[in-house]
Image (tube, rainbow over the protein chains, first blue to last red):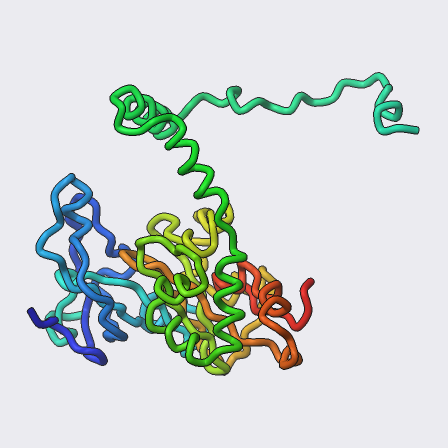
Amino acid sequence: MSDRFAVGERVRVRAAWPPGHVRTPHYLRGKRGEILSIAGRFANPEELAYGRDGKPARALYRVRFEQAALWPDHQGRARDTVVADIFEHWLEPAEEGGA
Amino acid sequence: MTAQAEHRHHHPHPRQPDLEDQPFDHFQLMAEAIGELLIAKGVFGADDLRRTIEAIDARSPADGARLVARAWLDPAFKARVLEDVNAAAGELGIDAGAIPIRALENTDRLHNVVVCTLCSCYPRGLLGLPPDWYKARAYRSRTIREPRAVLAEFGTSVPDDVEIRVHDSTADLRYLVLPMRPPGTEDMSEAELAPLVTRDCMIGTAVPQPRPV
C-alpha cells in the first residue's frame, strides 16, 4: 500500500469537526502545510479510543505549517514553523477547495 | 539555638492541607476503582502495580542526557539516534519503552521545541515524568503561537535568523530535542558533558551552557 502524499507536497488539513476522539488539533483544521516526512503507519486512534483494533493502520505524516499562516495576529518571525503529526484521512491536496 | 527551640513561640501557623482535604475527582476515583478491581480479579497483584509505579517514577532525564552526550562524541552513534532513538538508547542499556521516540536536531539555523497541545505527550522513557508546566494550558497554548515569547520567559533567546520549529506531539511519536554541543567543551568526556544536558534542553526550552549551573 503506497502513501497518498509525498514529501514536499502541499496539503490542506480537512476543515471538519466530527465528534469523537480526534488527534488533529483544531487550530490546524482547514490550514495549508507541507509534508515534511512520513512517520509510518499507525492504528487509527479514532477507533482505538472506542476499544476497536484501529485497523487498517493509517499513514501518519509530519506536516509543517508556517506560523504566520496559522495565526491572524502573528507577532513572531516569518520563518518560524509548527510541525504536527497528522493522519492521512485528515489531509487533502492543497489545490482542493478554498482557504 | 536549635530549630526546635527557635520555634517555641505563640502564634498560630496555617495548617498544611492533607491530600484528603480535597475531594477525589472523577478520574482519581476511576483510577482507584479500576486498580482495585484488577487486583481483586487477579489480573495483577498490588505488588505488580506498585513496582510499575516505582519504575515509572525512577526514570529521569539523566538517561536522555547520557544519550545526547554520547551523540555529541560519536558521529556514528548520532546518526543512529537520528534514525531511531529507542534502538540507540538500547545500545546504552536504556529501555526507552515501546512508543517510538524521534530526535530533533538543533543546528545554527534551526531551534526545535516540543509541546503537546492536546494533552501531555512526552518522551517519558528517556526523560521521566514531565514537569507540571509542560502539562499546563499556558505552556501548551502559548508555545504553539508565540514560542519566542515563551522561550524568553525560560531565559532562552534564539537569534532572529534561526527558525524556531514547534513540534506538536499530536499522535504516535514522541520527540527529544538533540541540542547543539556548547563551545568550549571540546576536551570534555561523556561523563562531564552529560550534566550540561538538562531536561529543558531536551524539551527545547533551554540550550546547554558550557558549565553546569
